[in-house]
Length: 475
Image 1 (tube, rainbow, N blue to C red):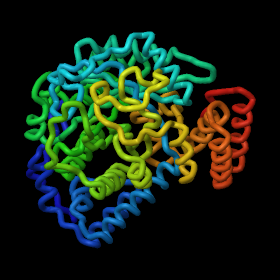
Image 2: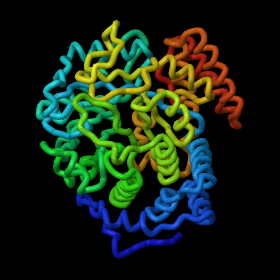
Image 3: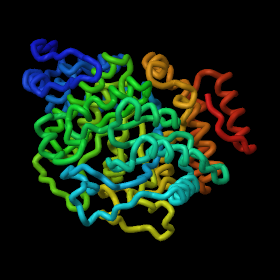
């Protein structure tokens, strides 16, 4: 179990490439899974300690169905231990789909002449945000193609614009970003706009595979993209998200790459990524992909559980690319954030008659078209606690400060009460009769499960304030 091929280990140096394919392959090829080693790794994770590459490889190489179930059960336990029953909700808002890159798996790629290129105007952005607020959204991720027009100043402007929109009791309290990697000065500009997490997905961590998919544009530079979040950290932006697009290479390698990236950020900056995303390739306009590295549903469930065990305190995002049934299953094994009421076509949230997906207007096909209300209703049926909380970001509990709270496990003391308060807001402002009945019932159950009577009294007091018209109360 203690296999550590030191000859492959490369030093963690800020802003230097840190992925060594031979290092990762050596772990995968030499780590042996036994009942004893798998159970020892699970036990370490349940003690809230991040796993090493060697330990992660042991879980990855596990094929015994009984042990795979133990991995999934461990992930389920760890999620409850660290996050409780809460699920954070958000919506993606695509701002522009112009793109200078030519990635073979993406509908936005430059060579796709069928794509309908759009950059939302300020008025259109305002209308989109109003529509999202009408549904109860409080958290957005703004998404941009990789194009010169979408520079740091433009991104900062659209962020401030989204924050400025207020409709009735609606407001956006956290804006995350998914955009092209920036230089240090660029990251400083977007940070000053008050963004939350800045996401950059490596897509595939395998350097040679990366070359085969990224044929043009800045994204063709593997090293520049790999070190992008180092530049964010150097700029003082300590809230970052990483991800891999599963289906571009062997899923086992990509899981190891994500863990290696996490290790690198912790080693160099004393803080890991705030979130990890793990989308699978889905249909896109003019898609040019084979299925050599297709990830089955069973392997997808397994890799999500392994990621949860490997990085106990990192948020994990499950997107609407996946179908409803699979989302409902996977959510048990460590997912902490999902999108709801998702529409990918630019300008589609404000379209009252929008129904069918048009792949020439969006980046890829989504497979969960439920409204936010429907998702909240079904989460409540599963006794999951829907949350729109943004307190940690707004109170400066990010980066090392977030780790100070989350690593000892204290974050649950903030997250569950704040989830209850944001759900209370949703029930009062947007919940229909059925959702409201389910929601208040679950809130009562959560309150009864708390063992601090004074804290429960304070939460109840704040709920009454919300019912009386106050908003944005948090711990």
